[in-house]
Image (cartoon, rainbow, N blue to C red; front, side):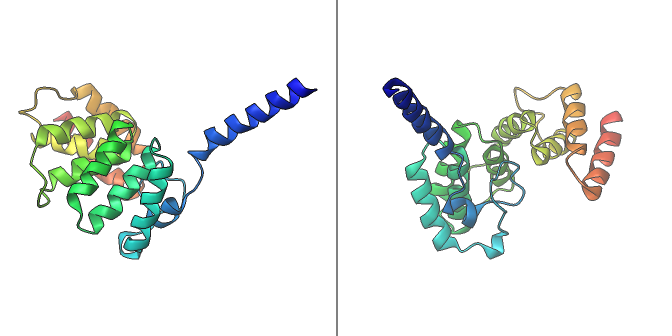
Length: 193
């Protein structure tokens, strides 16, 4: 009986530890991004984010769960909104190291849009978006194809093949609504020409 109790207790501790990284935190409640496909709480639009509270909650969550990529991404999001670009990029990089597809897409978008204090590197955008697109991130898939067709990645050493572009659009089409479908239809037409 004693062995059974010990095994049960150890098993219960393991389940608790394993689920601790997937629970909804204050960071999730205050900083989840609506288009993030891996968020675990309702997304908060940028204009509705309580930035100081979200930063505090996300810093606590990241400290408690440093291996949960979602939390590092969300911390980066709110730091970016607060104008703390360097710290935001570091936080995105932690999430990218942990293979978080939304962080890859968003950091690529920040670089592509040429925000102040962010070095321009279109080939880094290509790498980030291709990786995120391969993880079935619909915004990365559509953005990647659009940039590829516009020749933005032509100088990059590695690029997705034409077949990859078709796959990206096919996967994205099942995830996007009407307007996204129109964009995909236009991109498909451009890809065929």
